[in-house]
Length: 160
Image 1 (tube, one colour):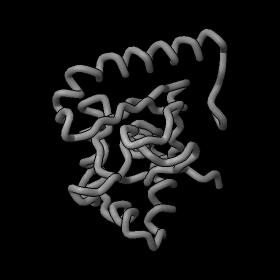
Image 2: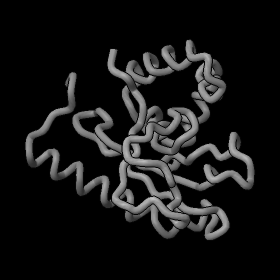
Image 3: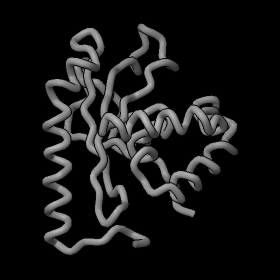
Image 4: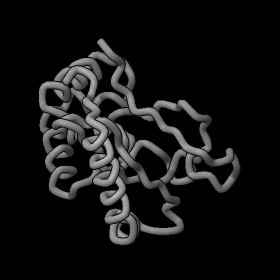
C-alpha cells in the first residue's frame, strides 16, 4: 500500500524568517497539517477510509484523531464547506517554532486530489481570517489553473 503522507517542498532558504524551517522532503503530520487535512477532506471516500484505517493503527499521539470518526466527519465537512483546510495549531505550544498558521486547497484531476497548495504565516503577523480573505482566492485560482493545465495535457492520476 502506498504511504499517504503529505510532502512539504519549497524554494526558500532555511533561516529565522522561514515559517517552515525544516529541510525539503519533510512529511508533515496528516491529521495536523493543512496539507494532510486538505488531502483527506477532498480525496475520494474510499481512499480516505483506507488512510484513516492505517492512521488509526498508529501508536503516535498525533494520529489519535483517526480513531474519532465523528471528529473526522466534522473536519471533512468544515473543509468542504469552506473550500480549504486549515492547520490544527492545538498540539503546539505558543512559543514553539512549529507554531504557524496554514491553509491548503486541493488540486483535482478526474475526481482525485493530485496536489494541495498551501499558504503559511506566522500568527503574530496575521490571523487566519485575514489570510483567508487576502490569499484564499489566489490559492484557489492557482489550483484551478493547474487543474486546467493537467486537463489540457491529458494527464491522469495514478490508479484512475
